[in-house]
Amino acid sequence: MLKSRLHRLARDPGARGAFFLIGGTAFHFLYGSFRLFTGIFYRSYRIDVTAFFYLSLAVSRLFLLRAYRESREEDETLACRLAGRVLFFTVAIMLLLIAETLMTGARVHYPFPALLVSGGYAVTSSGLAIAELLYLKRLKSPLLSASRAVGLASALFSAFVFLSDVLLSVALLPPVMTDALGLTMGALTLLFVLFLAVVLSRNPKSDA
Picture 1: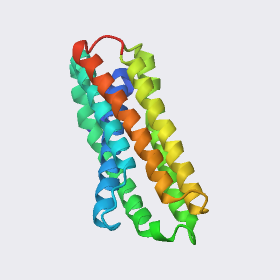
Picture 2: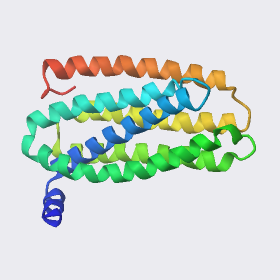
Picture 3: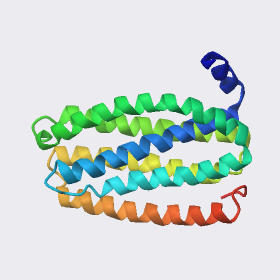
Picture 4: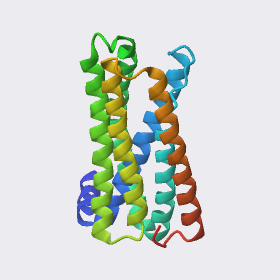
């Protein structure tokens, strides 16, 4: 059964687009939740403001999925079933993030492992965004503009997080500056998500 579904997924670029869209949603939701709760419970109740950015990216993808489902309901159902496999991948990422949390206090002395995890997130997030764009572009989907904006925001912020981790590890950027930059970018992204929500709510099938 799984083999037949995979064959169907391979033949339909629309289903692949939804598959990666759902994968990106799950990945950013889990990563954002992880950053938020570990900041509260394991870092002396210090809220990691960048977590709100990751959660906002997940919310923006949920709006894209809503519009996508209305235009391609059958393929969306198939993609939802197969997207469950993405959760196994995100669980593996979560295990790496737990390691990152344990190593956070030792970044100055042992920066490489933490930077490796941060760089892995940047590559994964950017890869998911690129996959979304490639498959939605094949469809010439009206959601392409919205997906491009979300993907660009995701890729840029991934690069920003990795760069800030590098600067923090070599003691060139104090933690308070990292939080301030994260809060600023998170606020701008939330405004973008609100705009996207209004556009898609008015006409889900129009070009956002």
